[in-house]
Amino acid sequence: MNIEKFKPAIVYTIYIASTPEKVWQALTTAEFSRKYFFGHAVEVDLKVGGAYIMRTPDGALHISGEVIECDPPKRLTVTFNVNWPALVEKLGPTLVTYEVEQAGDAVKLTMLQSHDRPLSDDILSGGRQGWPAILSSLKSLLETGKPLAIEMAPPQRMLDALKEMGIGTPQ
Image 1 (cartoon, one colour):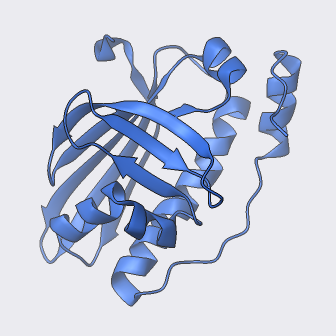
Image 2 (cartoon, one colour):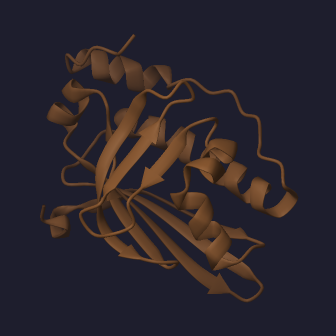
């Protein structure tokens, strides 16, 4: 995969009162991710070419991918493909990169969602809604010990755009 073709479509930066090691652990372990990622468990084989998997709260496969870059506790890039073959086929692969940097007494966490082709704002609305909630919940968990409880569903405008493209939504 030529990651040079991928351009960031979504970029969020958040500052967390924590250490790079704790942020890294939160991003890469199932036990920690379940707490802030609304029950979803992230499983990562922390080596280039290793597996990146996210499971739903009931254990079903939700995201599958591969580790593209791994520099603990500073940078992790993975392919991030929803277990929805028609979506990946039509919209292409997604890269997600986490950059973790010390920033004084805090950690600067930057998340980039990148694509190898332009995508409409309607299609990107799902990530633009989801990532701030996920990262805010991560911040809350690391700073207070409690994640946020945010109820979300895919944005209707994203679902409508997918339907218009002939991509049926999973049941």
